[in-house]
Length: 318
Length: 318
Image (cartoon, rainbow over all chains, first blue to last red; front, top):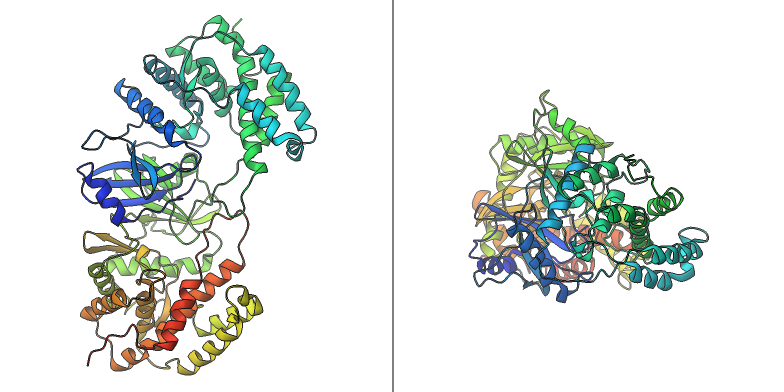
């Protein structure tokens, strides 16, 4: 949400020369992305995003993320393409940080997308799943059930500062979810963070998907459940946008009956996942940090709602 | 340095309609400006900056700043022009904040400008002074000698947390400056904050001056002294860039002998002015604030340097 590493034009100009690009005519830090530094950059009449990767992204994982983005674009799915320099290299170093130049996508992200946009977003996710079917990269989901267990252990009773009794409540929820978690469903590369602000629209069409830095190998239907929660306006329990997102998804890729049956478990799981990371950031706020900490409570509300009403977001198709 | 007020596209679209503009095709928060929220916006193939004014800018002063920007552009000086809506109105309300749409200027700001850029910056300031000669608006400089006295009183002995003995040192410096402060020099509208990051360059030419929100009525030579300090790389005492900035200024508007003689006093005064506001922000840091506090010490170093070597930044023309 801010610029952490300041890049001066005297560092930028030789960097752009590696791509055969002249000095920038526009260069502005933008308030976007998951704790990376992002700049909007124009050179030679073309626009780019320059990303410098900060602490939360592991350098050794960057080839996976950048390779994935490149693969998705090669397959014709709407995503931001990394740019190769004259030697065919994508991952660079700039001002001491790993850095990459990414194609700029023209489009806007509504905070509260309409139902038609939710449907378009769902369709774009299904296309992404299709486009990555032959992507060779593998990355375990560090924020799956095992990761949740570690986070709950690490925060321990301090979770009760978020809500009274939360530590015990989440331990019980975790045990239930671990028991119910499917063992064998269609899986592949998932985005794992496809909130509305990671989809750029041009009118009613998806112009591109961005921010692949949580992508990993996991169940497709779990990715769908993450976004069904994420596209419901924060703090609301109205299932309308979740239903539309799923409908858009299924127009491109229909869920199997087993996948559809797993959705209530996945909706609970993804609510727990975002509750845990938001609680962690909330409990570990750094004074003076430039990151605006997100409220964990809407995800606690969602988790309880799904637990008490397992089919609340699942359309009645009888 | 961040986005404080989040604007959703559902609020933006009716706002743009007031200007006869279609929905935005690009809308990104940018990390720029003095505690305002700034967005880069594209609509109808044209680019704009959308500014929402936050706490530090007084709403009743906005017509002065926007009127000044408009006047400067009308006179042909390079600056960012406010855009009028279909009814000829510039100052709007958006998401509960005063807001204005400003023309986008293509250009970049080097952190450490070269000597030729410093010279170009000085020339642009002199043109700005010329362009505002017939601007009717008046705004007293709240950060002149009287304002410094108030700031020193308000911070009091807590100034000693910035540097040992600073409270007494600054009281003595203030008394000296008040005694030496000129009573009658050419004055008019000054920018009062023309740091390198408020000048956009296109190659070696000034594309535009931005961020007029400290502009006020004061001595032209004081404005020059502010920038002579500001264009020296932070932490350095090398006068090269100050000399070049002044040289560029004087190619457009020569200083009178009285103005030239006042420069040592003005260089001390402007060092004190930025030392005081930086010390104030440093002493009053808000935990969790999105503002990165600037280090006051380089300005203490500059102040002492000018006090001990009054002609250090003043070219020997003998």
